[in-house]
Image 1 (cartoon, helix red, strand yellow):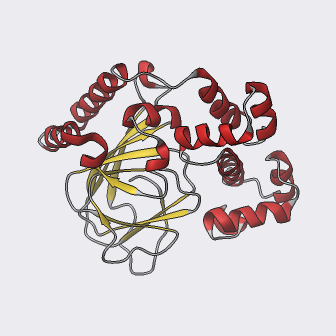
Image 2 (cartoon, helix red, strand yellow; image 1 turned 90 degrees about the vertical axis):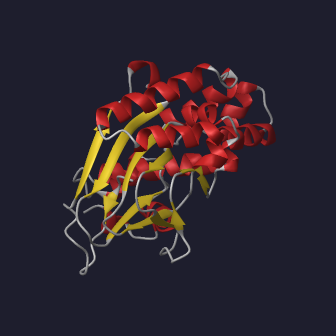
Length: 273
C-alpha cells in the first residue's frame, strides 16, 4: 500500500521496497486514480501512515498480510490480506514486516461506488475482505494475478476486470454525482446548504445521498478535502500557515491546527517536513 513512510530507529531503511505505478487508461480516468504494485525486498519493520485519504483502495495481496488500524497502532489481531477500504476521517496506520507484495487500485469516489455496487457507507471506517466485496469474481481475479509474475500483465488484467465490471453497472444519478464533484472541485469550500438548494433537495436528503455515494456526510467530506489541500500545499515548501489557512477556507490558523489534530493526530508543522 504505497503511502508516506514514517521511520523508527529500529526500522530497516525504507528504500527496501519497490513501488510501480500506472496511470489508468483514458476510459477509466474518471473512475480510477492509479494502479500500484508494491513489493518489499528486504526483511524489516515498516510503518506507513495515510491521513484522511480521499481515495477508496482495493488491495489484492499475494504474500504476507498487512497490520492495519484506524487512528491507533495496529495490534496482533489487526491483520488484513486482500480487501477494500472506505473513507476514514483520521490517520490510518499500516505496518508490514518485509514480506508484503500486493497490487492496489485507488478508486475515485464515483468509481468506487459504481465498481463495488454497494453504498460506500458499507465500507466506511472498515477494511472489508475481498470475497465480501467482489465474491467469486474477486477470488478468481486474485488467483490470476497471483499466478502472473509480470507486473505489466497484472496491470492489464486488473484494468480489463475493472472495465468489464463498470460496463455492467449503471452509474448513479447525475444530481448526486454533481453534488460530490462540486464539493471536490471547490476544495471543500462549497456550502452544503447552497448545494441542497440548487438541487431542490432537503439537507437531510442530500446527506443521505452523499453517504450512499461517498460513505460520509457532505460536511465531513468537505473537511477532508480542505485538510488534504492544506497538507499538499504545506509539503510544497510553503510554511505560511496563515496564508494556507485562508487559501483553504479555514477561519484562521487556529482552525487549521484543530483540523490537523482531528484528521492526522499531529500539528501542521510535524507533517509538512
